[in-house]
Amino acid sequence: MKSYTVQEINEVLKGVLFGTTSQMITAPEQLEVASDSEITFIGNKKYEKLWSLSKACVAVVNEDISIEPGENRAFIKVKNADLAMSQVLELFAPPLPVFHVDIHPTAVVDKSATIGIGTKIGAGSYVGPNVKIGENTILYPNVTVLDECTIGENTVLWSGTVVRERCHIGNDCIIHPNATVGADGFGFRPCPERGLVKIPQIGNVIIGNNVEIGANSCVDRGKFSSTVLGDGCKIDNLVQIGHNSKLGRFCIMAGHSGLAGSVTLGDGVIIGGSASIKDHATLGSGAIVGAGSGVTCDVPAGKTVLGYPAVEARDALKQWAILKRLVNDSKK
Image (cartoon, rainbow, N blue to C red; front, side, top):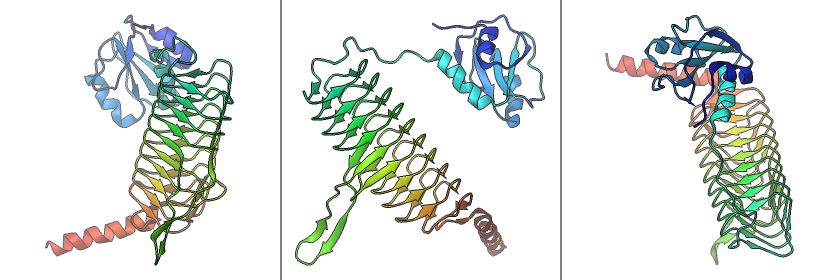
């Protein structure tokens, strides 16, 4: 089991140490349930009151904390406790699953595929014709990468991931279990003779560098040209990205949210959980969509929208306040 002194952890965080403890730190844990050998985090002043009830020996805290650590306890003060937490979690992270051979004997790798040095391919995986995979990439068991795809360096595809033909994934990406990249876009048109006619989806998906896609999420291929996810995008579990959508850099989509076809997001757009964006809508850089909202038109850069249908946040809050007053008045 890994363990560290508070001084060793502070050497990593480069914070300011207040108080001291002789206790060896064996794990990180949330404030309310931490034991006396664990380190915790206080990222907001409203949680200060919980420190006296916690058994944790150390807390990583923001610089504005106003309480004292107490006897045989310590605070590590940093500019951003949430970011520091990621460094502490890395210290205690257990090792990833082990590969005893680089390419498992049950994996099927087409002879025309190019596999980079240090890349590992797990049991039951399939790598199709003319696929190119960069160095030090990992395909865990039962990953499928179909014809003419490219995958960059230091990328991880977890079990069950499917990358369909002609799609491209950049460097340092993480694709979580059972995500699908490059399924057909949802394209059908009514036909008097044949009912619903399927529209061929002949484009692909292009994913930039440092992109993370959550479990069971789907990024559909373009009807023509490409569905694009820019560098640094982070996609949660159970997210739908429709055909020909274009995401700029560092966009965030929380769980159960979805883009219809041909949506355009600028850089740094944030979409809350269960929000939905109408086809062909454009959201400017820095726009924020609140959880559960339904966007039916363009959103200017930097604006926050809420509600269903979504309107500018201040207008939505006014509407909700009026509705609440009406309800209260009707009860009188």
